[in-house]
Image 1 (cartoon, rainbow, N blue to C red):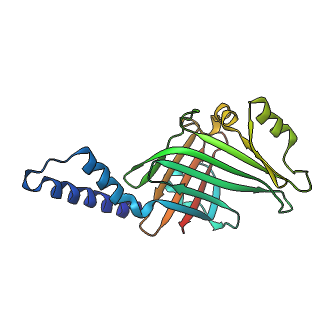
Image 2: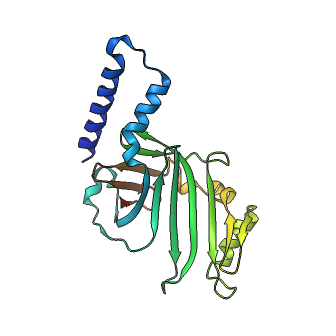
Image 3: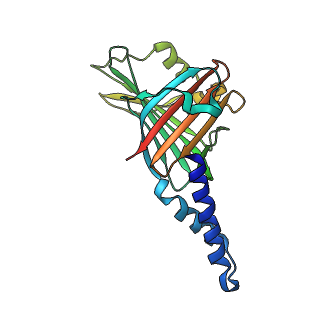
Amino acid sequence: MKKNVFLLFMITILLVGCSSGKGGTKTTEKDVVQATEDTYKDYYGTYYKVQAGQLDGNYFDDYETVPLEDFDGYTTIQLKSDGTYIDKYDSYTQDGVLFSKTTNKYEYKFDGFNVVRNRNINENNFKSKKSIILYDGEHYYKKSVLQEYLDADATILKEDENSIVYDITKWRIANNERDAEENHLENDFVTVDGLLISVNYYYDSDETKVSVYEKR
């Protein structure tokens, strides 16, 4: 599937190159930007996680070996045309009670049809917020973790009877070791079938995780 998608991408680029060179017309930077937007316009949007699986060992280059099961939680990835990559996910207790919502904003770029997320995060290229869900003024979030956020200068963005929303950008940047490139292999790519497939291998736990997202 990846080979077919990449071939389609290369054909598109060749056609754009041929048309721009016809009659001696010079290709400008604006032309390149427009060609890029035209190539990827069908891939911008929000993808919902529909399947997930994991397997002990490194199957990064053989990800189709990882067995998948239907995913019934809420996790999304949004690819925006301005280079913003937004992932959102909800967290639940073992009893199925929603206790937090997380939103992370990264920068990204397309490389062929691979989606390359910038994991070298700092306060200029990354933002993270955590919404703690309240039930009659109480919450199910671990107080020790919440205190870590506060110790890392987390600020309250919004507070009402239903939730408290914290900006935890500084905490995420300070605790980004597992997501760093030297500790975590990642390959996200889109397909012509409207899917986004995310393949991840973590060195510390020696496990491969695969997630399939569907554009809606």
